[in-house]
Structures are given as C-alpha cells and as structure tokens.
Length: 276
Ligand SMILES: Nc1ncnc2c1ncn2[C@@H]1O[C@H](COP(=O)(O)OP(=O)(O)OP(=O)(O)O)[C@@H](O)[C@H]1O
Figure: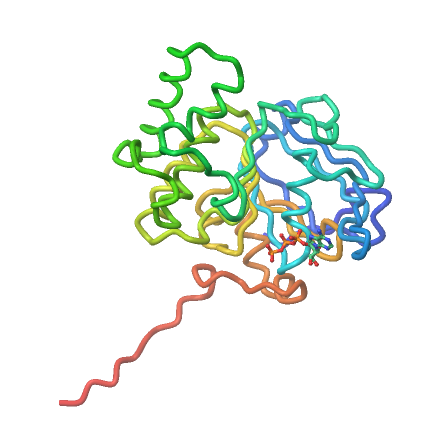
C-alpha cells in the first residue's frame, strides 16, 4: 500500500505522511495528547516545533528519528521534567504539570544507572511502591510480581551496582512495572541487551497491555513490538502510521537520516563460491 499524504495539523507547514493503523485503535480513549508542542533549550532552539499527536490507550508506538532529533527531550516533556515553551501535553485528559509526579506514567531512562540506587535489587524495585504509601504486604506482592514478570527472580538479592548493563536494564524495567503504570516510555531499551535478553524484552512487551512509547534506533525491535510508528525530524512529525509501511519506505527513511531495516529489504539470494 502506498502512503497517502494528508495534512494532520493545520499549524504544520509540510504534509505528514499519515498511514492508518488498526481501526480498533481509533475507539480507545486517548492516553497521551500533544497539541502544538514547541520546545527549545536556552542554547539550542526549535528542538520541537508544533508537534501534534494523539496516542490511544493500549497502542504500542515506536518513536524514530536520527540522533539528536528530540526523542529523549519529548520523553522529558511528557514526564514534566522539562516544560514546553508553548502547546499542551495531556495524560489521560489531565494536563502534565512541570515536576508533578504522575504514578500512571513510567519512564525507562536511556542509562539504567540513572534509576538504580538501593543496596539490593529487591529494595530497588520496592522503592517506588513504598513511596506510593502502600502497605508492606502490598509492596511485597508488587515486588514479587515485577520480579516474575521480568524473569529476574535470580537477581533479587544482588546489589544493582554489581550487575551487567543488560541485567540493570531488566531491574530498571521491573522497578517501573512495580508501580503499575498505564503508560510506559522506553528510551533505547535494547541498547545494552544481548540477543537472548533482547528477545525476552520483545516477548514481554508484545504481551503487555500498557500504552507504550518506545524510542529506539533498533528498528527491527520496533517492527516486532509496535503497531504504530512516529517519525520525527526538525522538530516536526514527518510520518505517522503502520511501522512496515513507514520503515519500508526507503526514500522517506533516507531523506530523514535513517535506513530501511534489513528485514524489509527484498530477498537477496546468496551465492557461495564453493571450490571442489
Ligand atoms: N540540556 C541541554 N541543553 C542544550 N541542548 C540539549 C540539552 N539536552 C539535549 N540537547 C540537544 O537537543 C537535541 C535533542 O536531544 P535529544 O537527547 O532529545 O535527542 P535524541 O533524539 O534522543 O537523540 P539520540 O537518538 O542520540 O538519543 C540534541 O541536539 C541535543 O544535543
């Protein structure tokens, strides 16, 4: 199917490649609503310029774009760690306020070191639920459930700072899951994972019911997990829709500094030069 060119925002100067995703996603309530979002750092202007997009509950959305296009910045805005210069962000119909804790939102940082600090993995996972004011029994239940969900029971008593990068990543994910968030932001979640752990994460995300927004340069990973992709460049939404159609569009991908994933390339027959 060829992408159709539709303008999805009246303030957007150029058309956005808009490719419909599964129709059932249209009837679910909106989890994240961005309206004309604009953001500049003091010494770095126009990181985001009028971004408008709705993400519905239960969608698994990949966020793609070249290095420095503003993916992590967008996540920090969604968490209220940064405030937009203009535009609005709503999470389940309530505006996101700067520095306001929203337990329904979880953010996996690009570097898991940034979110692990307790003496043991179990304590680390318990930290968030304890701060929600839950009873000891409820905290215990959530920690055990998160350990099981992520398959890291064997790490429960280890100090987080003695773990490998991939193990730390899974502990950080367990810590998020123990908060029972409805929306999860994952920033480069496969960056330090080996093939087996990456596969485990893919299966885990494929089974998850939460709304997911995943920023990644691992396009094969996004193809396996996501039902929708947003391509951003120069602070704007360039394409929005079906992952295979967007990532399979070589001209579109190359124009925005990306490469069509290998699995979407036409099959190339390999000829082995075998000498008798
Ligand atoms: N605190 C800051 N002050 C000034 N500029 C910043 C700051 N943080 C990030 N930037 C710049 O903002 C731009 C967007 O950065 P961001 O980290 O959001 O990009 P990204 O899309 O997540 O990149 P990557 O794919 O490399 O992780 C980059 O040019 C970056 O150098």
